[in-house]
Length: 437
Image (cartoon, rainbow, N blue to C red; front, side, top):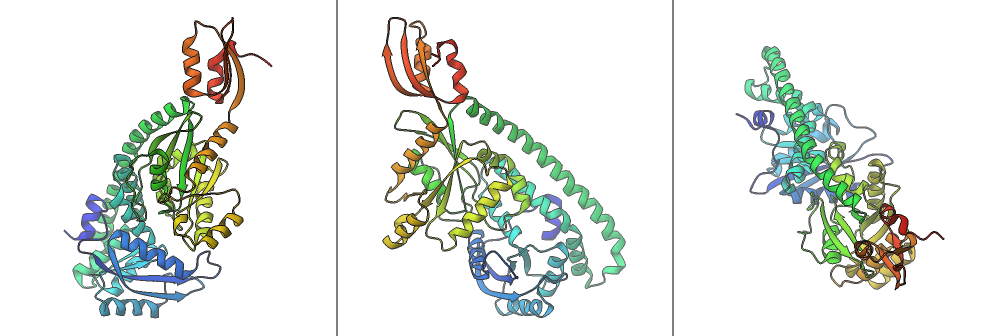
């Protein structure tokens, strides 16, 4: 059984093998591109490194529009094939998404021992490597199979060509019938994964609803991949969530609790990082994870202040937050990793973003400021009320101390009089004890 037949029968696995593979990167410069080709290829090289490949060469081309057969021009495609031979490459990675036919045509040109993938397949591969929870693995499998489905025709053409030395026409009918069988197989697998994912997501939704009904203020950390969200979560909550200096090290959302100086508790949730050209299939597959952002009261938008493309990264994150419907949630920009900046660079950032918070998880600078900002936003969403609690309702006094911000408390002949700030969801709890102004 060939690798391609194995993928069709059992579903995609990781693209890269051990030992590390030799990769050639291909980038295309298009008119009015949002990102420079240089920075986009640099990011692609980091993605390849994270997946387990060493970049041995890179080539680029300026194009008004992609070639429908090979994405790049025919001359550039021949050059890529030559580079593969010269550098003994194992894989060619395109920075843009290839159509199934383009991928198939390119694989015929570079030779049967060289894989051709695009940025989407590369990101899917990294997600497959890093997914640790059942939900995360299911989400990746779903995205992989959705990506595979339209590529089955090209895979079968490639298989037939390899088996018969180019005599594809003589068995085209058989290939077509087998193609339909395989399409049904992949569609069935997609349906099965969706069903499993719905069950896991239902459990996550119940957990989320529990947190919502508890009235606890919910904070989500969102941002570009490798901005330092997990490290920031660890520093804020004094926990030990695994964090690495890698792209997409975190795929599974993690929630921890933080106690503010007022005594009030809030939850902080670390979420999957974003990236430019994030495949739509991944956004859809990770919907339940991204719902953690949608259900938050505050988003900490974490920015890597040392990255020269941080403005474009902010734009990318803003676009995805809008795409998932989270653009109206209160937000605080957090410029992280400031310990790596020069003094003048940091001052320039402070002037440019006067409302942001600047932090370092190494020196702990700005952490207390960030906690205060979280507390301020949480308080702003509360309502100040005054209650008179009868002495026989000590449970209500305890509830107020555990879940509200106490401003003043005194004992009177009729009971305990408390001035407090309360989350809207808790106001009804105090009912008739509320003193109307």
